[in-house]
Length: 378
Image (cartoon, rainbow, N blue to C red; front, side, top):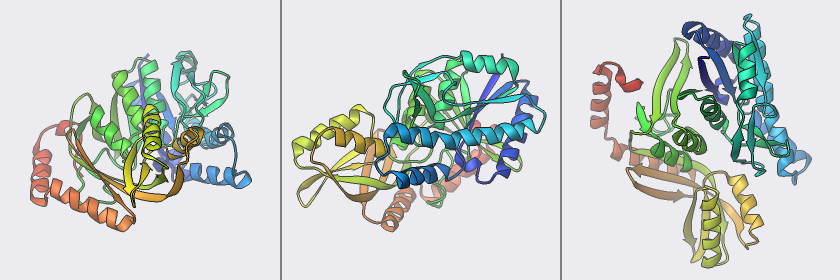
C-alpha cells in the first residue's frame, strides 16, 4: 500500500477556513499520486497556549498528567475539523488520536519519550479510508494515560508514523518553505538551505530555532527517514529543504525567554548540567557577580520539573535571549538581557557569515542551476 505522510503545523491553521484549503491539497495529493494519505496535524495557531493558560488559571498546581490531557484536546479538535473538511469533498476519511495511534511512551508527562509502536491501528484505518488524520504530539503511556510529546512535537509524530510504516520520507508543511540560515521573519537576507544534514538541523533546534523538533530529527536519523520541508501556497506545494544524512550551512538562531536559574554552588551546577544533559535538554553555564547560573533553552517547563525533583537550591531569577551561531562543528553562544540587542547582534553575525555580495552570488547561481538541489530560493 503506497502511503504518503504529511504534517501540518499550527501556522497552517490560523483560521477555520484553512482546513478546507488543506483538505483540497490532500485530495489533489492523493489523486495525483494514487496514494493513501496520513495527515498529522497540530492544534490551530495559538490554541495550545490558550489551553495551558486556562488550565493554570483553574489550578496553578495542575498535575503534569492533567495538563497533558488538556493540551491534547487542541490537536484532537484540529483533527476533527480537518476530517470534516475532507469528508465534505466526498473522500473516505477518519481521524485517530493519541489513544489509538499505536504509539506508547514512558510517563514523563510534558515531554514523554517514545518506547514502542504498533502500526496495526493505522494500517487498519488505511484499509477502509483514503485519508487518515492523526493528532500530533500525543500518545499513551503503558497504563493507557494520554501523554504529550512536548511543544512543537507534531513533527515527531509524523516521523514516528513514517518509520513504523516503513516509509522513507515524510513531508512537513509550515508557513515558510524550509530551513533558513536564520529566521527569515527576523533577519533580512536569511537564505533558504536546499539540503541539510540531520546533525546540523538538530543542533539548530536545540539552540532554539523554530524549525523542526530536535527529537523528530534524531528519530528520523535513527530510522533513515528523510524529512521534506514544504509550504502550501496559492500556487500549490513548494519544496524548500530536504533533510537527510548530509548537508551543511552556517546559521544563526535566536531563542527568546530562555530560563535563568541561580545555583548555590559549582558542584550543584555540575549536578544539574549532567541531569539536563541526560534528558537531552540544552543549557548553558555562566556567572552573574561570581554566582553560578544556568540558562535553559529548550523544554523549559519539563526542565524546571527536573530541577525541582533534584532537590537542589536552584532559583529561577529571570530570562535571557540566546543568540547562537553555528558554523561547522563550532558554535558560539551569546546571552542578552533585551530582545532588541539580541536581534541586532544576530543580524550582524548573519551579515558577517553571509556578506551581501556573496549571498547574492549564491542565490543567483542557485536560480540558474537546473532542478535546484531540491528547493528554491525565495
